[in-house]
Image (cartoon, rainbow, N blue to C red; front, side):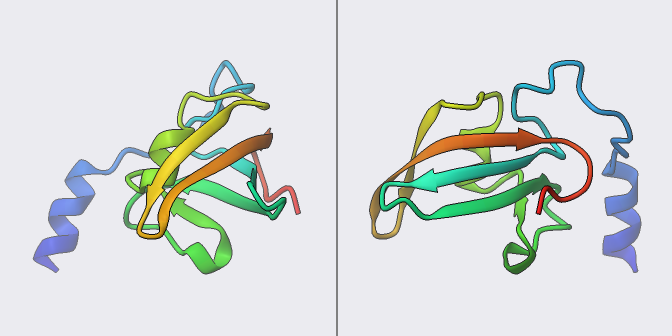
Length: 99
């Protein structure tokens, strides 16, 4: 309970879309394609909300940090345990899941 009480003091509710919806910000659904042509869809969420199996990626994760502020057609590089991974941003969407 104490942990949750402290977290509530730090939480900010984001209930508006950003003015520039062509860039990746908190709450965005982002579609990325890796070097092998595999496409994945993620939503950038807070660290307490992440669930990679349902596409929710913590804003503190290396991939989310690399995506923030980027646009469609940008390429990003992320250091993974297996080496450097390249991704191409194919779509950005705000609101409900694009799938």
